Length: 433
Image (tube, rainbow, N blue to C red):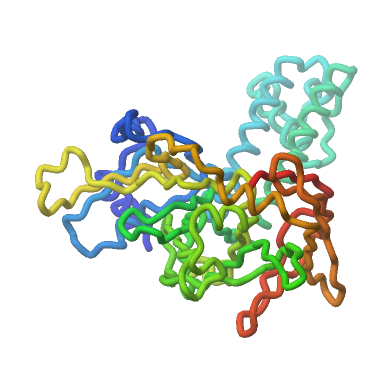
């Protein structure tokens, strides 16, 4: 695409996209009497720029999307990768000329500290700046020129200029290396995962997380593999932690912007089939998702693995909507103007409910308190590691574990492996049921 067409394209797109200065209260639609804001972080793991893709996702020419609170990608490496060779070459030459002229003025002001101003190589009477510029340029380029310093002051001036000249050489080398390297692809995940009951289908427990490509990526042929770490009672009466795969009713195959991914936890073909919220909360320890896709922009495969456990799993909560109809839309029946508020990407809310009756004891607490020693079995290469845990006070379950950086989770047959999970440090965890 030519520079003129690219400029016209961005000019037309800018008519429908607002900048970061155009702010909006992204909780204005929430009624304080109905919702509690549990978590609010407007950033994902990496800044996502989906304005162009969002515009191209709809074929209706009248469709307009206003981006507010946008997370701009200000990475300098990305700017270097997208800049042209002519721009970078002009930038290097301009910096070199600016340094040479600046130090030439300094040398001319301190001409008594340098040799060469009293000979006849150049008529100093008519052009003293030319002699100073020649000394400065020769020192900047590392050329031996008969105009060295007379005293320590001249030595310090030339040493400072030499230091900046070396920095410019390093910068130019980095620009060349950056232009020959392709930008690295990443997949972004939401900070939290929500588990909630479907508002229409009572009894259906769903888990939701958000995934998106970073920067200008367009992921195709996307595949998801979701596994859960859950505790189950064995035939011997012991509680054992197992990793099981969870099937997705609907899995997006193309990811071009922030995408919601839902998992029906208690579906008939899933490990939590027939369980209610309290039973799932008791048994679910963590959720891991493995995503793979082909980046059509950079031409490479992208894979990523993310897991949520502990406080990163928010129970009986939902994500706030980040894509909604523009309040100023004149046509309410068939709207064509929408708002994409990136500040709501990680906002988790919970509808306010009446306090439940506490007359009857909780069955979940009773089932946890009688747990015997729990054994956790995880395959690591050809070895099998056993982890044991004992019930903690207050009905919770706690265990200490040492995990390896390259732990491999073996899922059910026909699925394959999900690689690389947790960090390689020793940690103590005590979680309540």
